[in-house]
Amino acid sequence: MKQHLATAAIALVGGFAGAAIWSLSGLGHSQTRDYLVSNPGILPEMADAWQAEQSREQLAQVADEVRKPFPGAVLGNPDGTRTLVKFTDYACGYCRISVADVDRLIAENPDVRVVIREFPIFQGSDVPARMALAAAKQGKYKAFHHAMFELGSPTAENVMLAAQQAGLDLDAAREYGASEEVTAELARNQELARSLGFTGTPSWVAGDKVMEGAIGFDRLEAALGS
Image (tube, rainbow, N blue to C red; front, side, top):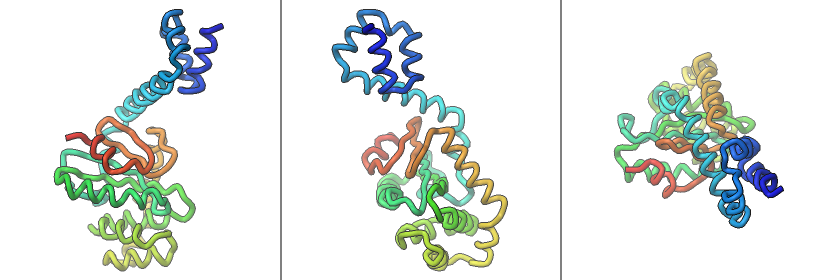
């Protein structure tokens, strides 16, 4: 009975895949079971460790692709050896908050490059994502990226204003933004996000770590290491 209760606890904390591993791994013997039943606080730690291992395995399958930027969609040092990947959406308030953290990371770490993956998941954010990739094509990604977030909501008016502030060739940008190349890049980012288990923005890849949310400067710097 105790073993079934412990297995159920693992299922609640770590999902039924975790419960299956628990049942089949030999961890269910009486001494281990009794310890965990007496110390339930360790269960979230076990679940976190298991999820972290799953994330590392998922990342290993797509690591090269996820770190390879769309040409021009890079902030910081494009030749830097420490890479942070950010999946972002211009309609996401937490993405807007995290811009300052990324800017500080770049300012304090000259060897960091930040690969931005346009991941439009909110209604209407597909339009600025396409314009951002058009800005990357014209070598003006940073200017558009910052202008778009500073302007706030991704209305059609703000997208055009950000494009003008970035100095884009608007006709060329509109044409390229509607191209199959841009459509393929957005689809690729959706698939990469799915592979990594991302369900929202901002989401991050740093080293072998996969993270979600506005996690702050300190955690981003720590994840990149030295």
